[in-house]
Image 1 (tube, rainbow over the protein chains, first blue to last red):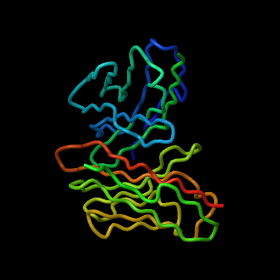
Image 2: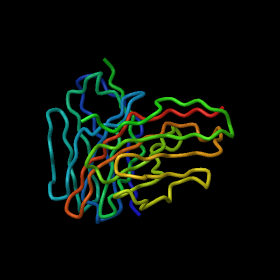
Image 3: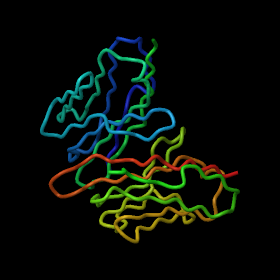
Length: 111
Length: 116
């Protein structure tokens, strides 16, 4: 089955800095890679996703890159703000339609 | 679109009691997932339904856990008898799935279960 590794587990940055979270996956058949943000006490919510036919996608301060050859994908947040503080999960999904989640990254943005 | 609706939001029960968690997926979504979230284990997939049929229940911890999806708009997760180690947040999520596309999961607000 699919295995998704996510790093780092905790990331602390100053407001205005950039944050990068990296994930690797094992199943070459995976073709859909969503990222979810979970604020404390709330549900995970999709923030951005990328499909395997695209190498990069951007939405305002958030971008995701995908390297299918190396089987890794990354989330980039620029100009971080305190409200970006949350747990971020990556996931990989393929032919089984069952997404496999990473263990999560706790992002702390200090004002 | 009301989103995925779960009930109850909070459940406190005593060890040995039966617990039933409920979920209404988004209309038109044909895939439904039950997840359990704890600090130690993160998000664990318990069971996955597609078109109301259980496809993968390998994540169900043991026979004390059971899940049903009698129709496209309702699912239950039952724990009988409950134990303190079952304390966690249980999320239901739904999505559309098909041969030609993938789509994101939409999570409900979760049920926080405490077993004393």
